Image (cartoon, rainbow, N blue to C red; front, side, top):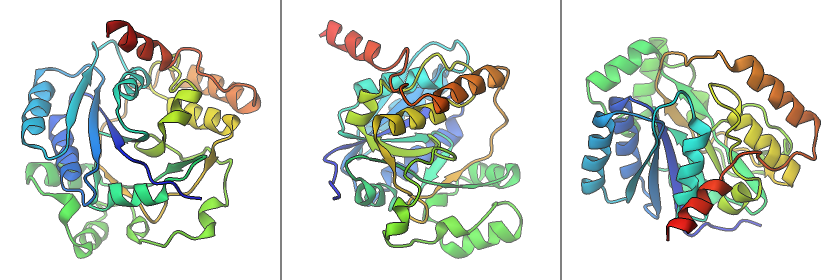
Length: 282
């Protein structure tokens, strides 16, 4: 049985890319459902990002908070944990700061929310030229009509169109309850209580790779099931250069250990330490 969240907390991960973050925040400010807050989980960006968030926060109808830590390499799991620890909502949506949400994004995620389930959405990838054109032209992509995206696809600047189709919430959304593949934190929703129950992201996953898959696997071990968000809550994912993948092999080995052992539920180093820091400071 579905249960509607009260307040949703959208956690937006960013690192030194103000133009993309601006497009992301503007798309969130134009949501039809406005009962949510935004926490920008900043993995060590410079002053330009801080100024952007402050400026947008003053003008936004939606609360926007900046959660920052020092740049010590790719530590997305850590900064997402810090943001989640500071979130006021009972439901979390993780997305990347180079992703753009359509106006119905929050409303549809709220409809999909259900006790005992996490909801991965999908994405449409815009290539380098399409991204440059969009950001340089200051185009509000989230407000563009379907024919605009058909044009991008015909120019091979958009990888696909099917995710833009909106299908009603049928039983097929429940057909892959234990699937962890392709559930990514560029577009992932779950109850905060479930996130805390598995101790959030495991911060031992430093460097690029698989910290989001690890979270989903531990959620499944905990008893939380997958509910498909495809054809309901797509995001536009702007092109970006590849991150440093030097930690890929080590992280992948750790991930396979988690897949093989259903007893592994808790992150070894996770969100609880940040909750304790918040409580100690009060």
